[in-house]
Image (cartoon, rainbow, N blue to C red; front, side, top):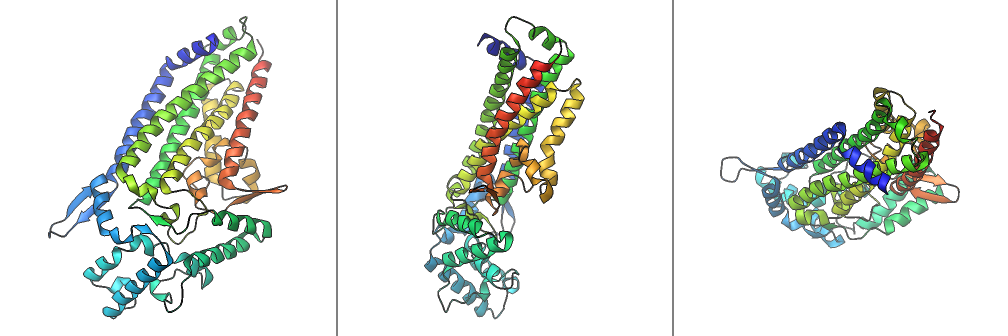
Length: 409
């Protein structure tokens, strides 16, 4: 324990560590501010344009769409579609773009519902985007059953595997229905969340790399590892100290940013995640707020796993620039090459697979139907990422200890 406390203090007093920690904290406040001001509402009711930001903008959005708030029942869907058609018929037009401004405003109050209800009918017809006006309200729309049927066709087309199809449909059965809309939420915020997680994770990886390599460059490491404490005890204490700093640092920054999001949106975070997706379907049973919180908490796990890999690279490097370059390259590889199926099995052993802003990110995976088929087991990718992160932590920890013990005096 004494070695752990000693290393914890020593790392925290390093200039490079304090600079990185300070940069990350400044970035957290900056992206919190950007998230707030990115939400804008233009009020033109008085003749002049008045722009509201953040929480005030949310209040105006919620006031405009108050008729959409509540459970998305079959009856409500049918009523909204009929209202949409009636407005178009009254103005004798066949598309929303040709409506008068007043008519567009009458329709816009149902936008949160209109954006999600076309998915099952688009998939099962031509495959092109369907206009709500094309839906037949003379018969029961059966929205949720249609979603189930569309999901089945989508999965069959993508995987052509009965077990995966059965697994996906079972996962969708767990989704709370009818969906619930609690208030406005901007999709841009999800993008900011991905950027936030990526930048903070990268900072933590750089801290891990620098702390290990700097000791080697300053010859402190060769002194410490020859003391009576022994190599195993020393490297384990060193890694534990870094993991503690990273975990506490991420928790602090996440608390600040999630608190900001919670303050801005309040009830909007209680909406079903499906209500956020345009012409898509998610099999996640979480609300928008819980998806974001899940991404934040799991990013701590992914970052620790990535830091373990960074420590392993640093132990086997002699120069900090080389260690940093390799760690950064390994961090970004999944984001840059995720679409290449021939590399996917390799990506599973790169802990940053769930991080980044590309298709590999955890938020993107919550929106997709991606599965991993294991012997006798099928896993949805978000769950698989968690399992692989735990495996990677153990793997790179053992490799780091083994590599450290092989260093010559």
